[in-house]
Image 1: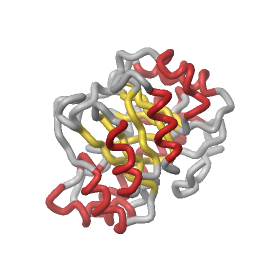
Image 2: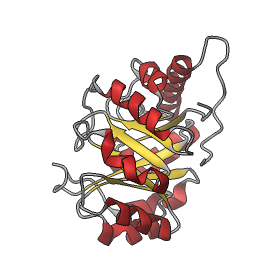
Image 3: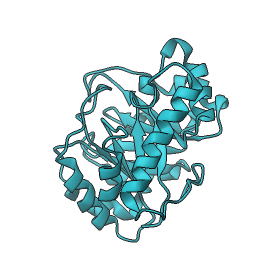
Image 4: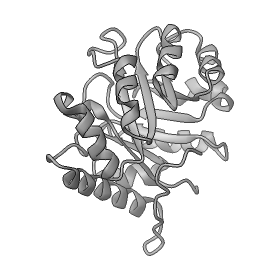
Length: 239
């Protein structure tokens, strides 16, 4: 496995009253990607924000916008999120009957396509779309709320998905309860992109956020490579 570890702070945990300032803070703090959790109150039991908010914050950073759609249906809204500035658009395998069609639609909009799996969804759900995706996003909590605890059973699932991916140029992202304490185990299992919300937005300054991001990154790198052979992140390059 050669992909660098990327850290993608979830703005769901940001102070929405100062969202622009929070985006600038995590940008300067070393975030590789900006993770945008879109919730509709239907597919998941919470409502967050939509394409207009993403469009409003897009000019504030050049970092990759990693947009995770926890909505159903997804297809009618894909174009809006593409136009708003999403770089990756990730849909849930559970959100509709025609996953292959949704992924084709994302790529036709010129965006990178991802599939997310809830904790109870078997990895077999993505077996026949692996050649249409750029990212697998494994939920390690039940989607809908921030601040939940990591579900330990997902470690084995990460390993199985990494095996399924093989040599394909697909990032394996994990989202849910990621902290400096479990980042090593997650990376050792095969994840290369870590979403963290509460664990990043702890404190009240860019310096605090930078320390939090660095701690997660160091733990993850330590978990995946032998001691003495840690590598430096590439700053969020899209593979």
